[in-house]
Image: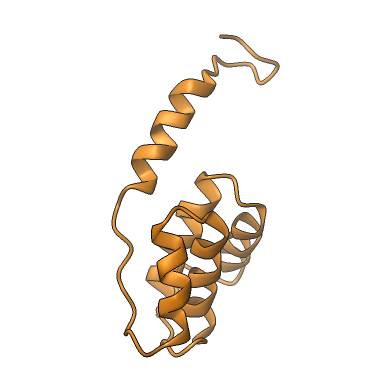
Length: 102
């Protein structure tokens, strides 16, 4: 299928890639944290919850410590699924120097 993008674009192929990308397991935060409630929603396919969980790791909130690598991966996952907030926050990580952060 051609598009105005100047290359072939097949939305069904993109959907298949997104579904495969969404199947990798999300690491479970400790049960006593607020992040665990968000994790439960994320594992049921709530893309906004994936972004919210990424934000928790990015900023060290909801009872979890900073984990820039996990935050980056979760933002990527949500961005690939179409979450605009995740795209924006992922862009912020790039602008701030990630993945070169310590």
